Length: 262
Length: 245
Image (cartoon, rainbow over all chains, first blue to last red; front, top):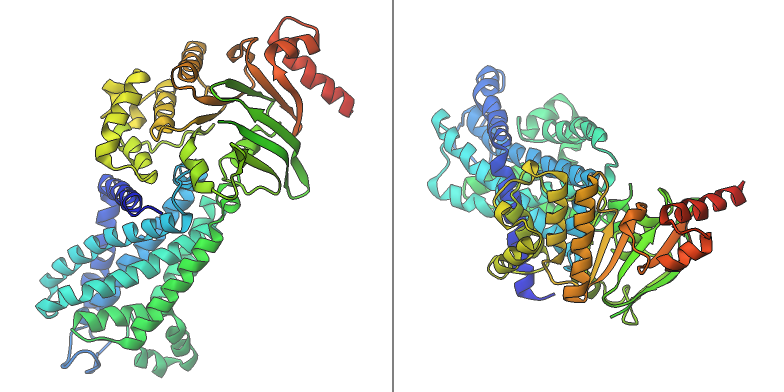
């Protein structure tokens, strides 16, 4: 593949994703309102019930808002990944996927472009969320905002690769509601996004182990540590490995027959 | 430049959609692919465009199999699908730029091509309009302009006039015929509307997944012993139905 051609292709896919995103302002707002509701309303209600002790990577007692902020960043990425999956299924049903498939560039490369484009657009929403979160005293170290960028990118890639993989498995748009019940909610609630896992372990050992096997838990921890200028190597490795796994599965699942069959 | 389809078979599970289909397209010709609904035209298009994988048989361009150099095939192929594939919320220009980028063409290099192709389709003044605001005929013109943006040798159109009024159908048909003359473009135009065919056209009649006629429209008339193409089409596809009873 010619490098210049690959670059123009990536720019084209990114610009289309960006244009679609800008035109769907409600998508941007809902992507922000959802985590803000959790941060402002849910956290206010549950602050007292869920006392947080000093845990890594924090070196002091923290507010519940501070604890859930990294999880909510990942929630934005999770919803965006699924939104991208939904748009892939929609494009396939409406036929516009064929435009992508008619490209002479390798299909795995096209998928990678799509994934990276989705990830980059998600990042803008995460930073908008973090800026608003400052108002409720979620104030990580200043350098943390920069340090968390690669972590957010890896997590965004994980969730957009998962979204792509799901889009290869979902036959019809109507089946997408199932993704909500069977993917988004379990992934989010069975993770360390809203409560530290030691609390979960106190309540139920087997739920704790399910959380430990949930890649989203490690994604949240990767972001949490990076935001507070630390590296969680285990979380990084698990997140990268899971991203690679879903990317390969998406490329395999994205064969011409499957993606074009009526 | 020739495109050859050799002994293609294709099945959806137990249902055979294409059965030993072979034909050849000649450079610069307007070829009509005829067939009633369900004849296998769209399946054939999906195979030609690599949306489906070949199960049996081979497709070659200038003697080279599309399996060996698929990227080269895609560069030489322009396609207009039966179902519109434009992004309705983007402008005409944004849609065309997206297509160009997928072919590795920079937006700078694409800009004059977009202008030229849209002018040829009498759509230059609509370049900044959203596709949602265009009527069916204009959307089709944009799709043809888009299919030509990367300067292909072969243009495949799968029932491009479905849902359009007779005047728009005729005008689109004439546009594409003009492209064959101007650019020596090889065209495969799938349709079941006989008014889009003239007696001199090379014709491939597909029926129930098999090639029934691979000749000229004139030969089709002679075979059906009539001077009306619509009647010939009905006679040839009806008689098959009766044979199958």
